[in-house]
Image 1 (spheres, rainbow, N blue to C red):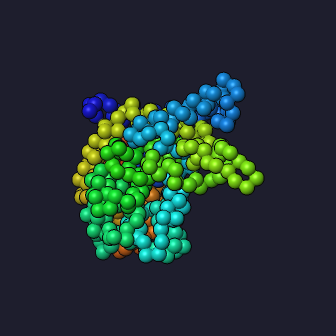
Image 2 (image 1 turned 60 degrees about the vertical axis):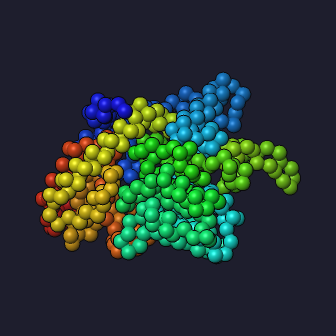
Image 3 (image 1 turned 180 degrees about the vertical axis):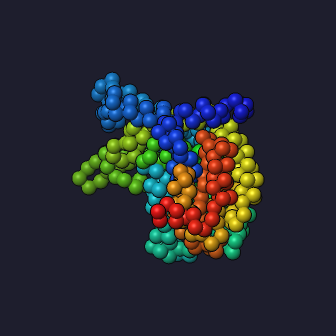
Length: 413
């Protein structure tokens, strides 16, 4: 491992992000919603639009060939990033589309009384598709993590029965920030029943930790580029080789077919099979730049930096009176909290008035209250590689000095 102090020089890293130059007085603590973008990611997209601009469906010129080569390079880079094979990686608009594709293709494997195991804390993207399918097929959704029990490996394993066909979960929650060990849990699930399909929403984990699809016995995995320094509108679907033939695309159109007659057509081979229509070419090229940026710093260094930062957060939050801090147990720096007697949106607005960007509410985890008994939601401060102790200190200072009337100061003048 590289020297973290040397590699993660925050002063140097922040210079790579134009957001800090353009917003010098602001503190960004909402990376779980979307990460900021380094200059090289922005420039990669600009270069495509300014210098290349052609479609990947065109291969009749040197410029077009270069664009196709850049898409292939990105696919190889993504595959290497998660230790997958080239044809197991397909591009889409984001994790939401990937999860909808997976759910749509798996519904034909389900029948009445079959079970899908998932957590109450899942993001809507990994919740609504399964609810829809369960209603259509009349199968059963089995939820993990009720009565103030944070989901963990054991709770998922205990939920599995002879009727379980699918187990799906985020391995880092965007609310509670718990971490499911995918290497251990996938091995145990397959020992119980090798035919159970495992679907991982890695949207929150992929920016912060190493994921190895060869070590983890995963069937499907999704993530979004914009959470990991990349552009919005680009995502990745990992589909294990053994499912490439049986998995069906969500979009039908140009580029994903071979032979077409009046009444039939055949699918192209993966990954083209899942990429109907024109690629988000600029997004793909930007994603490649984001992965190169992360690789240059080192994902292990990012993880170590963030774990140290979370320890510092826990220490400083313990000094704040009237704070309700819900996930001090989490090792990753996603922090949910409230001030006693204060509505979370009001507190988030107060922080924004003082130039700190956070998130408030339930963070699209609409059933999380079954775990926390909190239907109102939280304030969430989420940190990434460009944050440091000074950002924590600024937040803590405001919370320490906060008084109930402060939420009105910027409203009533």
